[in-house]
Image (cartoon, rainbow, N blue to C red):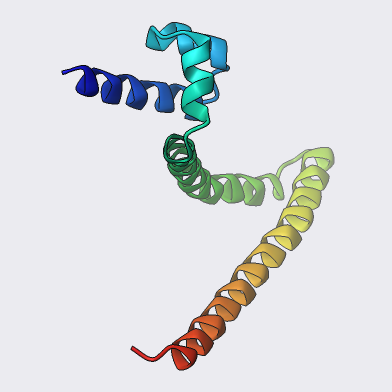
Length: 129
């Protein structure tokens, strides 16, 4: 039973740390001492669990931002036709700035994917199954 309690406490603790809680706050909320948290953070498996939870949360946030980006782009498109020249200028600047960054990001992602594919092919030739 003690092992099960520790596993449950570790799960809660990892979730709290992954969500950005400080060590003292996470310790308090998980009902453990700060020393326990520091000790757990020395364990590579526990640190990997925290990192995995944090990565999953960031992926969810990125997906949400991606969905909202479509609405944001539509809003900028509407603002280009606004009566106010200041609103039009702001929308135009945002579109030019963000459009360039988006193109750059997509290009980098494509180049990285191609590099990873080529590396995987190279490794497959090097170590046949």
